[in-house]
Amino acid sequence: MRTAIATLLTMGTALGQSPSVPATFTSAQVVRGAQLFLQHCAVCHGKAMQGKIGPALKGHPFRATWFNASFQFTGKSLYKFVSQQMPLTAPGSLSKTDYLDLVSYILSQNGIPAGARPATRSSLARLELWKAKPRS
Ligand code: HEC
Image (cartoon, rainbow, N blue to C red; front, side, top):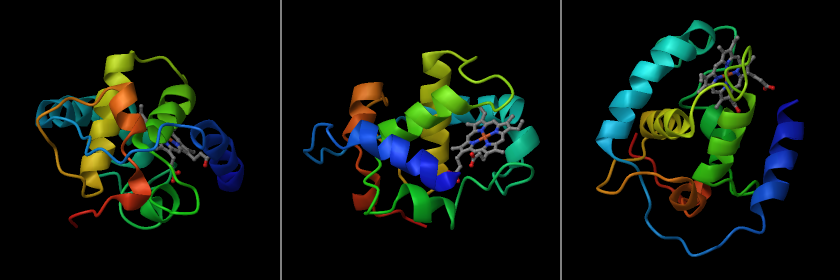
């Protein structure tokens, strides 16, 4: 299942623009994302993203998938997956802004620091996760 998702996402991102521009998200997005996560995601992924019915969304093995050089996922790959597949019981039911906030929160929980500029779908496409050097 995971491999199928990985293949699908790689196909979508392989042709994306390439320059590795530092692109992040703001701490305000992270704060909103954390609230949304508790409302819509924690029931399956755990309040601290530790995993429950759904997999953990921070640490290993999450990073082994999403920050893996052989898949070359960007922040936008993660955005696409989350916005098209999650919440599992109501995929695509949240707004674009909500999904951007949620992805910002997930990235921050995986050691990517917040910055001055808000994440957008196009800035996330330039965030090459396999090149990220998570802080924790
Ligand atoms: C009803 C339970 C449920 C809810 C609610 C839910 N998820 Fe999931 N989520 C899952 C399951 C199960 C998987 C594993 C699916 C798979 O591998 O095909 C998953 C997978 C994921 C993944 C990929 C994890 C990985 O290791 O690759 C992400 C990211 C994710 N969910 C984010 C979210 C976010 C964000 C929300 C809230 C908007 C959410 N999920 C809500 C059950 C849920």
